[in-house]
Length: 92
Image (cartoon, rainbow, N blue to C red; front, side, top):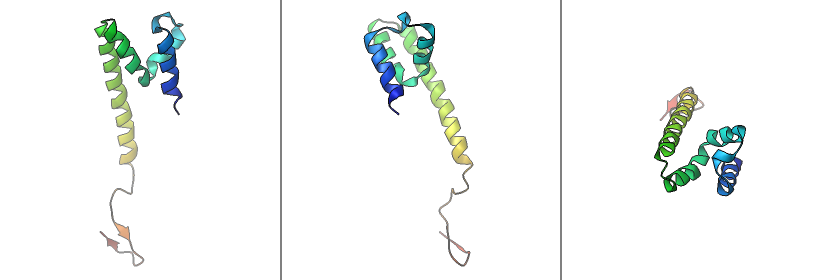
């Protein structure tokens, strides 16, 4: 459960992303939790474009996750607070 947070943190603590192989770079960039470390590094090196692209990625990722969660909860049939009694009448 904590691996998506721990692996990028250790990888970015000891090395920069640019020297990693392309596949590992792509996997670190795909994990949203790595952008906190990437943003801190970009702020220190004054690479504001990298920070802005990271923020755009996080906004798009959050919008997609929010859309998926909203669609999954919208299909729930149990959205009201009515309690069925033994007689079949609904109470509020």
